Amino acid sequence: MKTSPSLYQEMTDYLETMIAGGVFRPGERLMPLRELGNRFGVSPSTVRRGIEYLCEKGLLEMRHGSGTYVVEKRSVPENGERSVAVFIISDDLRDSYCAHALRGVQLEAARRKWPLRLFFSTYEEAGAPDFIERHRSAWQCNAVIMLGCYDGLFRQVPRCCPGVGMEMCNSYGGAFSVLSLDPFNAAETAADYFREHGMRHVKILSHELPVFRMRADVFRERWAEFGTSEVVEFDSTDVDCYEREPLRDDSCGYYVTSGTIFHVLAWAFHRETGGELGFERRILSVDGKSLILPGYEPVDTIALDWQDAGALVMEEAVRRIEQPGTPARRIFLNGTLKTAERTR
Image (tube, rainbow, N blue to C red; front, side, top):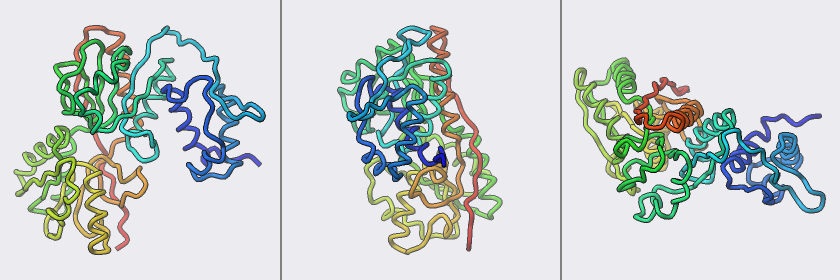
């Protein structure tokens, strides 16, 4: 009986991404199959079937008594030595919405036969003064893609190649095209949502980074027509955010500009009360992380399809490469209201 592809797809998607991004290089030996199974929570037979699937695709080869290796002979892309550098926040691709975007980038790059070079960098590392210099090789590619809120971390960026930033606001003087969820469309959706539920006052829970401040400011301006609001802003190191905003008031609505902020608050709320924040307060979160990331509590959210967003990021990178001199663009994507299932 054949193993269902869905059982090993998470593992094979991860391996394909690592190979496409150059993290697992041609000729490199992979970790043992047992270790792969433990990492992805699948049986040895499922791991083997997944490896066989990648062997059939020409990405891996199994050498008897030696292990599994990335195939050394790689086809030369039709566009020569051109490549795109991709920065992403973490190498744990199961625990980041950016991983879904990366999959979109990867699929679009494969369709166009563009090789990718993958770089993993935390926000703290990206904010270091020597970040650009340490990753100088990335800016030697034909374009640079930043997946995640790297906005505001750099003093300046090289102008030697175009960039595209997902969930960024600052174009760095036109060096970067930026793509994000449309804050104006989200504000309209949120205003309708809170009006429908009879709210007159909304607390806006936001973050210091520009893309979140924009969401907060645009919604506050839109909501002024219908009621009152106040902004509570957290910085990137605010581990005690719940102590300052415990969300005790169930008479008002809460507009949360990032799914990560909701996740932190929901965890603290459950720890203190035993309740589920998304069901016990009228909360609307932005970005849809609660729909795709393990461990996130259900909550009403304005969601993007992050894989589609990643494909558009890659399309924009190719556009700027193939049309030198064309200006950077600001691309807004409409989100979709997704309502969490309430059982009480």
